[in-house]
Each structure stands twice: as structure tokens, then as C-alpha cells.
Amino acid sequence: MWTVRGLVKTYPGKRGRGSATPEVRANDHIDLDVRQGEIFGLLGPNGAGKSTLVRQLTGLLRPDAGRVELYGHDLVAHPERAARLIGYLGQESTALDELTVALAAETTGRLRGLPARAARAERDAVLDELGLTEIAGRPLKKLSGGQRRLACFAAALVGERPMLVLDEPTTGMDPVARRAVWAAVDRRRAEHGTTVLLVTHNVIEAETVLDRVAVLERGRIIACDTPSGLKAIVSDEVRLDLVWRDEAPLDLPGIPELRAAAETSGRRWTLRLPQERARAVVASVTSGPAFAALDDFTLATPSLEDVYLALGGRQKGLVKA
Ligand SMILES: Nc1ncnc2c1ncn2[C@@H]1O[C@H](COP(=O)(O)OP(=O)(O)OP(=O)(O)O)[C@@H](O)[C@H]1O
Image 1 (cartoon, helix red, strand yellow):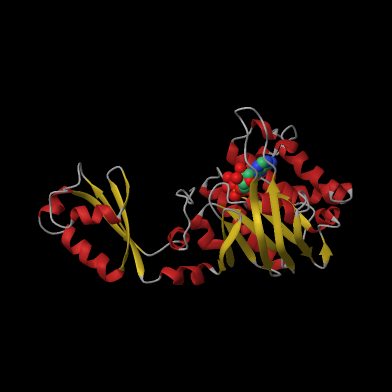
Image 2 (cartoon, rainbow, N blue to C red):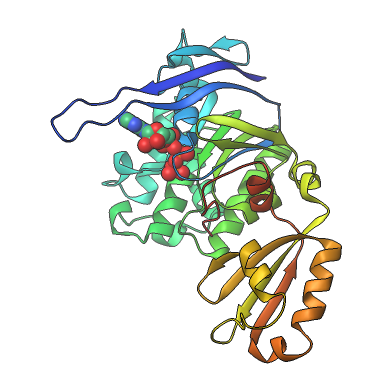
């Protein structure tokens, strides 16, 4: 339904004495197929090229090379057609900031071709659905970050589109607002077969809501599958976190070897180990003198972040809760 082939985007470098910047290949031959009715995710660290990809898929940025087709429309040749097919929630909301929550939703509906009465009816229904009725009269710029994000999401829903593109929709939201977002997405999927493309850093959310996910790293897709299919890559591994009370007891046998294998952050050591080995390590640090130096430990099954690292992802901080 959404077909992307060989998409390339390079931002030119800047010349300048002492401040020259090199060109950036933000998308490097991307191929992608998003299917009708699925929630498809783009996961990757800062600067991986997610927003650049999304802006090309929505007709907002022209690719240097490649094809983007949505419902048979060529969006590279006809980017203006994207607006009729896609409800887009970008990272910034500046265009709506001066408006009240109600007016932002209503105006979006009108811009999408709804008659005045229908735009008002949809506005009221969406604000009610998302629990925004009480703050409907307040300007977006006077709301908290999470409230503003929810209001922009509400506006993106008015004037129903078959495709929703959401760039980090739940950033800054509390759990109640997050749940409202995912319930609204689910409802549209069940009632209208809406397809969703979701950009996220949040691996926990990704594992919960996505049908399939593409992992981006420096402009390339390094893996694409269901969350459980991706996790099968590292299924024999577990993550062991050790938190030391004070200094780690490096004088004890085995501890220096653990440190060499661990990713360390202050008193916390994170190890990704085969299950057998993890069991042996837990047995050794929870008995004898090492235990006295240990403050806490946790064993966890792999997350998409572990998959990202196993695939050769280099940047820490994929997770942004
Ligand atoms: N307008 C621009 N001009 C020059 N370089 C850009 C521009 N926009 C993005 N880039 C660069 O292109 C690369 C990809 O950026 P992009 O915003 O697509 O990444 P992202 O995965 O969406 O990151 P984030 O998670 O931080 O939003 C980065 O190296 C970024 O610095």
C-alpha cells in the first residue's frame, strides 16, 4: 500500500571559514513496504534519519532519488496529493500555537475540506474522546508540553484520513494521555482500517503497540520485522544489571572479567549474556563476599534496545522513556 524504493536524501554541507560542515546522507537507499491497517514503527537513535524519511513519505521534502507510492499515487511527482491521504503529526506544533485547542482542531478540519458544521461536530467528538474538553478554550502556547502534544494529536485526527503519520506523538505525556492516544489509534484502526506510521525512540512503547518495526541506523534500515521476530535474534541472551553499593570489589576473583564485559554507568554494570552464563554470574555474585558489596541486581529478557545493539547499533540512548 505504501511502497518506498531506493530513497536517498543528502543534506548539503556548508562552507565557511572555520565552521564548515560536511554533507549528511540522512537516508541511504531506503526500501519499505507498509501494509494496510498495520501500526508500523520507525525506531532509531537521534539523527538516524527518521524524521527525514517521514517528511519525504508525506510529500513535505523532495527525495534526491527513489520512489514513494501511496495507494497508487506517486508522491514524488505529486507531493500535494499526500495531504488528502495522510494525517500528519510532526515534532513541532508552531503553526497551531496561537490557536485555542478547539480552534486548532476545527481549523484543521476546515483545511481538510469539512463543511463548518461537520468540522465543529468532529472537533467536539475528538476533544471529548481525548479528555480535552475542559481546556478547549485555552491557547496551545499556554499549555504544558504534554497537553500541547495531545491537542496537536487531536487536530491531526479531525477530518479522518486513511493514513496517520505520528512523529513521537507521546513525548512529554503522562500515562493517562498516552493511553488516550493509543485507544484513539486502536479505535480508528478497528472502525476504519486506518494505517499508522509511528516514529519513536521509546522501545517499551514500540514493543507494546507496533505490528512491525524498521530499525534505522545512520540513514539505513538495519532490520525490519515484528517486535517478537526481532527479539528472536537475541532470544538466548538475557540482560543482567548489577548495582554496587560503593566501589565494585575488583579484588575478588571473576569481578575484573565482568567489568571488562560490562557497559558501565557509575555504580551500574550492564551485561548481555547467554542464559547459562548469566545464571552462573548471578550465583557467584549473590554468594560469598561479592554479595556484601552488591546493592541490587536485575535479570531481564531482551528488549528492542538489546536487538539494536546486537545488530551493530552504535549509539547509546535509543531509549527515551
Ligand atoms: N535541514 C537539515 N540540514 C542539514 N542536516 C540535517 C537537516 N535535517 C536533518 N539533518 C541531519 O540529518 C540526519 C538525520 O536527521 P533526522 O532529523 O532525520 O533524524 P531523526 O532520526 O529524526 O532524529 P531525532 O530522533 O533526533 O528526531 C542528522 O545527522 C541531522 O543532523
